Image (cartoon, rainbow, N blue to C red):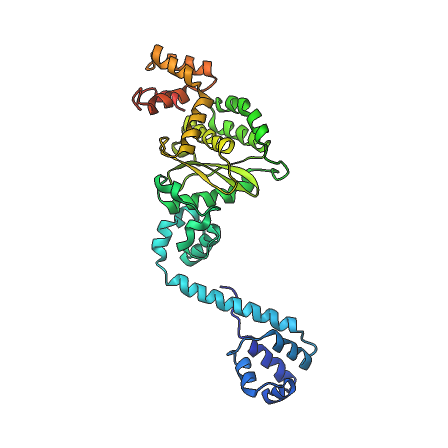
Length: 350
């Protein structure tokens, strides 16, 4: 809570006593009632700007600004005391569970009250009831299938906190849709790198070159989100969670969000991709179609499943190579489409 502060009036009284000025003398000098002076010196009345100026005339060596600055600090102290009382009156254990304090503040030596204050700051709201308004567009409908809404909001804010740390010197590079479109071939080549960590480093560097942020933050518990597209300081920002840690899963999430960026982008909206690739949202359907076509030509895919042995790993590898993508991506499509069991060809998914 910081240092203990006394009412401004008590400090004023000490200065008056040093100068031998009584309450009655002060009342006469500045033409106010003795009762008002008594209330001020006993901390029952706030110091006003007008009174501070009058005190400056009586004690010229102490400026009005000095008194007003102290009064402001004292009022802030009182407000923080009141806030602490309010927080202590909440069910902080229940709030800590809903907002995942243990994951967010892991290893931090903080009380529950201190964690609650920091969480409110991170969310950018004054109370936990307002957490839905922590997002730019104050919309949360898209989270209905994304797990607990609190978990999704917390994850998005954790990603926001990581933007500048994970993306260097991007402010000077404006976002260019045309330049992004020109990088898609390079991006597909990067996505075919089976080393996920290396491919993501290259992906971030390439996206940064066209004014797009890329952030990786592990999803918090009960946040079933693969990725998100939002805006940070005027730049499009793609967040990914690496849920399930499959190479194809992570990369599909990235291209899904890039599809939203190329097809639907509105700087005031946030687009979130949940675990289930099926969607009743038209924009999400378009993003899924774009991502699938990015990795595998739709007509070629139809030909492949109609003429090849889709259960054979070698056939899948050869088809994937011809498409310039990974065998794991093709296997994931076959699994998702119900053409093979989810247990089949899993060895192809890195």
